[in-house]
Length: 214
Image (cartoon, rainbow, N blue to C red; front, side, top):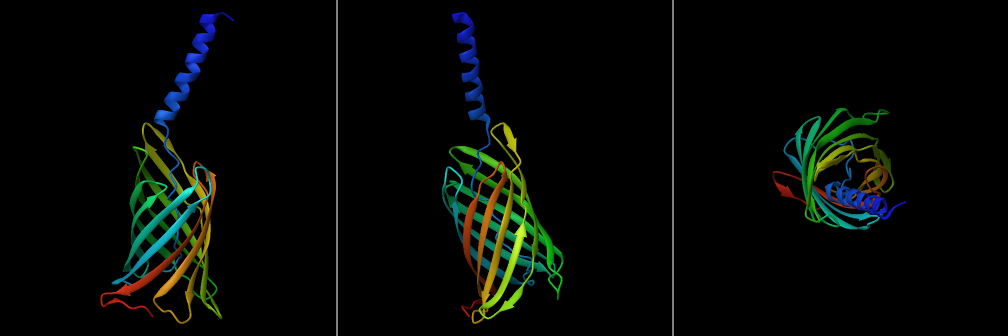
């Protein structure tokens, strides 16, 4: 192979790598479900704080905050704000649960919306859909609500797009003696163009009269 041909091959490969790096959508680590099929009553609210450990390289830690508000007997809205491994992100979601958790029937619902992120001077906008199934169980330590979701997204930015998909498995725990305080634990497994993670969260529910730690 002549020197000129070798040079063109090397130049072509280098160009391809640079173009791919420049236009690729970063697999930003911040997606998580952190919710069950429970619906807040209207005029009721909830604050959630979630430390999220990203286990897929490049690993890191995010701190995510969420504010939930009840809309009606079957739907909630959610605002999201976070930073850490991903420099900054925020989003808005709407949750609709047409089939409630009742007797032997699990709750079935869907949460959808968008999240915008900024990381390493790149901006990414992602549309997200989170189908949710959950079932509450009474135990000696309080109410446990195992849940599952397969979040699907469409991310676009910097001239490219990806379809992040994950499997999210978790449980909610509402201690017997704490009516307004509850906790969540969740593990996410990368299925496509995303990342794996482990999250925990504490959340406080309140109404128009304010927050009561009980």
